[in-house]
Amino acid sequence: MSQDIFRDAGGAGRARLDAPRAERLARIALGHVGQEWPQKLDLVLEGPEDLRRPSELHPVFHGSFDWHSCVHAHWMLARLLRRFPSLPAAGAIAARFDHVFTPEKVAGERAFLARPAARGFERPYGWAWLLKLHAELDGAWAERLAPLARDFAERFAAHLPRADYPVRHGVHSNTAFALTLAADWAERHDAALLDLLRATAWRWYGADADAQAWEPSGEDFLSPALVEAACMARLLPTEAFAEWRDRFLPRLAAGEPVPLFQPARVSDRRDGRIVHLDGLNLSRAWCWRALAAGFAAADPRRLLAEQTAERHVAASLDHVGGHYMGAHWLASFAVLALGGS
Image 1 (cartoon, rainbow, N blue to C red):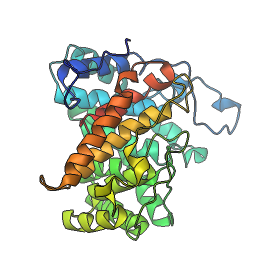
Image 2: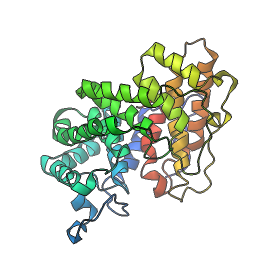
Image 3: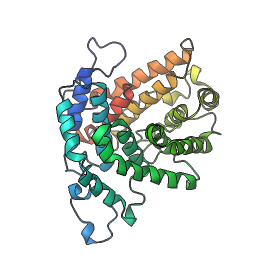
């Protein structure tokens, strides 16, 4: 796929999630959600009977290189179908969902999850994406996936009270990102879990102040500072968030901490970990948009946040459909960055 296929006509203005771009992103995901190989499994082998092919272990989510990428690719397809129901790809998306969201295949996913050695499977990143996917579905697809969503909701409910500390890395284990994504599902389906997410966010992050933002690390796809701010924006009441934000990022109007305003350079997009930095640029844009929405229209920080989001999108959007090590997951982050969350 050509590197400039995602650019806006005329090359100016805010990058938007419009129907042509949605179609291109959908086609990327449709090209890999059923692609079984190569595959990176999250699997503890308890015996030789566990040595099975990915499509047997994971009847629904066995494509896209790894389980969580397959889950959030399906979320993206569901999101695009909801936003643009007349997409040319709509029929292929619906056919995919009809094929994988069946009671039998969902039962297969639940059976894998029920294994004693799978207690920590995909915690918390895959947990949160599965809930976000289910929150995006309606009708028979949602009904069929609901038991698996409930399994992960129960895991959140059991795990969060005993998690004394957050995980602040800019990769899959980041807890702020997980709380943010899980909130969409909890808001629709589980008020008690939503209360727990809010209480946990405050317990973990409420006392944080004056973020130094020593980032990025060389394999981040999340900004520890910005994703924490986005989490609090999602889960705190408006006034409480504004007070917390101004303690956490007190020098925002001066363009500090400087690293948060500078898109990351990606030196090798064939390297599966270095290409994480494209995801960092896109997820930072998502976070900057969340921050921008919390400022009054006349507040100069709003424009600064919006402009910073655009710079980050511009740095990586054209590369979403590149080498498979990025292409198997970056489209979902592009949808987040373009305001499709």
